[in-house]
Image 1 (tube, one colour):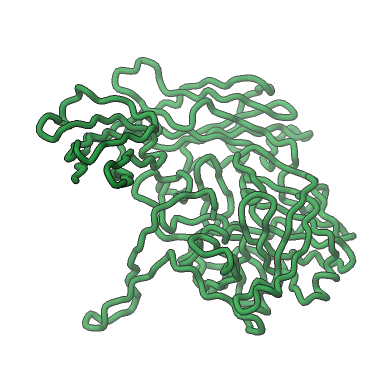
Image 2: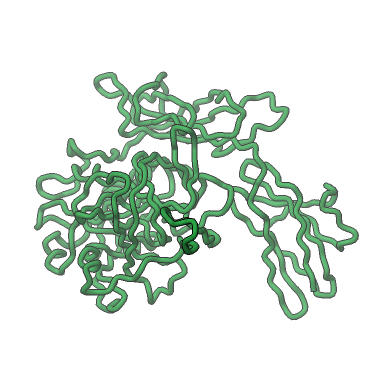
Length: 486
C-alpha cells in the first residue's frame, strides 16, 4: 500500500456466501478496519517474529527477513521498491548505501520491547515488473536468529483458495504510539498482471483481505506451512469512483480487458529472488537463477501518460517515446491487456538510445496502450528480462467523480475552494455569485481556479458556486451547483 495515497474512506458490504434466504442479514465488512494487533507470546507472534517496520528510507513500510541459508552471512530484508522512494517504472538500484532502521518485536502489549536493527545498503530495488527492495543489514543471519527472529523461505504464489496470513504494521489513521504488528487472514484469488499509474507488475495475485492499509507495503504473505508466498504491494481498498488504474486504484490485466476490482488487495511473487544469493549467502545479480533485472535496463518514456482524441483532430494519436538502452533497441506495441513485454513474440525494428519513436496508435477509442522496448542478445534473439515499457491512455470520457467544496467557517466569514481528486478532478473552472443572478448552465463568467481559496463575508451569503471539473485528459464535467448558506 502506497503511503503517499490520499483516499476518502469508503465502507462496502460483502454478502456472505451460503446464507439462507430467511437467515440473518449479512454483516457489513469494513475493509478499512485494520487487523487485530498481535500479542507477544502468541502463536501469531512466533510466526511474525521476523517481520519489522522499515523506516528511514522513505515511507513507513513493513519488511521481513529472507532465509538464504548461510548463518554467518549478512542478513537481508525484503520490502517494496516504493518503500525506498522509487516512483518510476525505469529505475533499477543496485548496491546503494543506506541508513535505515528495521524495528522487530512490535507487539501491541510490549511496544517498548521493540528491537532495532540497522539497514546499511539497498542491495537491489525497482518498480519495473515487480515492486521489491532487498535491504542489507549490519548483522548476520545467525545474530538475528539468536535474538529470536525468524527467517523465511520464499515460495511460489499459492493456488487460488489457499488460506493465507499477512503480518504487517499499518499506520493509516492509527496513532504512532499504537503502531504495532497486526494480523490479517484471507484467501488467495486469481493470479494476474497488474497495472497502476505508470507501473506494470508481471506476477501478482489478488486476495479478499480486509485491513490492508498504508504501512502494510512490504508485508509477507504466509501460506499454511509458514513460507512467504508473496509480498503486499497495493490495494483498491478505499478507492473512489472513477480514475481506474491511477494511484490507489490498480487494475487487473485480464484477457477481456483492463478491470479495477473493488476492495481487493494484491501481492507480488517473491520466489524469483531465491536464486539471487551465492554460496556465501551474499546477494548477487550474477547468479544464473536470479530473476531480477540488471541495473542497465531498456527504457521507453512517452511524452504523455493520457490523451484525449478531441473531435475534429486531423492528427492521429501517436506514440512519442524517447528510448534508452545499453544496445540496439527493438519495439512492439498493442493494447495493454493483451500485450506482454516479457513475451519475445512481436518485437521488431532497430533503434538507438536517444531516438524518439513516433508512430500512430490507430485508435481513438477509450483504452490503454503499451509500448515495449527490449534488446537482442549475443545469440541474436530478443532478451526480455530487462524489457522497458511505457503506457498511454486514451480518455474521452467526462469525469464521473462528484465534485466537493472544502469550506472553513470563521466568526464573520468563510473560506471555500473545490477539492482536487486526480486523475478525475485535476483542474477546475468556476464562478461565484448571488443565487438569483448566477446561472451555472450559462458558460459566461467561468474562470480557471488557480488553487487560491476564496473568502466571503457572512453578510454576502447566500452564494451560488458553479463548478466544472476536468480530468487529466482535459475532459470536462457538466456544471455542478453548490450553495453556501449563512
